[in-house]
Image (cartoon, rainbow over all chains, first blue to last red; front, side, top):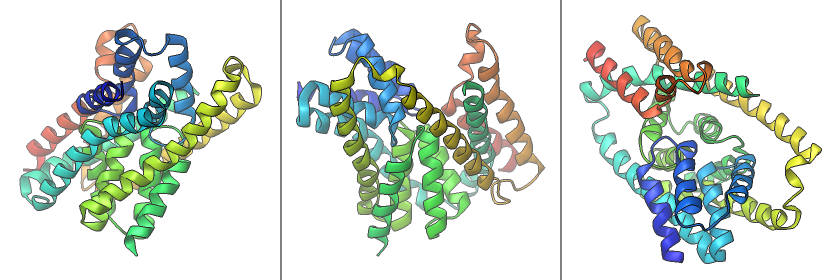
Length: 132
Length: 190
C-alpha cells in the first residue's frame, strides 16, 4: 500500500505541469476512480479542506490522502511521491540555468517571458475577484 | 546565518500561504526581496520556470529560491522542507478535527465567513505581488507592454467565456502561455 501510494503520487508529481489545480483531476482519477481508495464525496471534502489550509495545495491533499490510507507511513510516502520529482527537476534546471544566465538567446527568451508571467498573475487576480 | 533565515522564512510562508500556488509565490517574493537574496528579475524568472516544470508551483518556487539564495543543494532542500512542515502540522490537525465533525463543517457559518475574509486578503496579497513585479527590469520597453497586454487578454478569455466553449478553456494553460511568450521574446530580442 505504502509503495503504491508513493508510486501514484510520484507519477502525478512527474507528469502534471502547472500546479495544484492541474494535479487535482489526476489525483481524483487515480485515488477515486481507479483505486477506489476514497469515496467521491469524501474526496471533495478533502479538497475543500486542503484548499482552505495554508501551504502548497497539492502537498496538503497528499498529506490528507496519505493519512487516511496509510497513517504516518502513508503521509511520508505521499509527500515524498508528490515532492521528489519537483525538487529533482527544479534542482537540475537551477544548476544548469545558472551557467547560461547571461547567454543572449536565453536572455531574449526570458525578456519575452517576464511580462507574460506578470500578466498571468494579474489574470489570476481577475479570476479570483470574479469568483468571489 | 543564511540557512536559519531561509528556514524561518519558508516556515512562515508555509504557515501563512493561504490560497494556493500564487499566494505562496507572492509570500516567497516578499521574503526574498526583503532579505535581498535575489533581484526582482531573477525572481520573475524563477516564477516562470516554476510554472513550466512538473509538480506543485509553490514547491517548485521554494526549491528554486532556496538554491538561488544559497547556491547550494542543501539550501534548496531546506527551503522545500521548511515549506512542507507547516502543511504537515496543519493538515494533521485538520484530519483530526475532520474525523469528528465530518458532516457538519461545510455548512458552518463561522467557517464560511472566515474563508471569505481569507479569500479577500489573498486577492490583495497576489495583486500586490503583481504590482511589485512590474519593474523596469522586467518591462524594458514598449514591446514588453505589448507582450503583457496580449498575454493578459489571452489569460482572461477563459475566465469570461462560458465553460461550454472548449476553445476558450484550452487557452487556460500556463505552460503554453510561457512557451509562447518565450518564443516571442526570442523573435523580438535575439
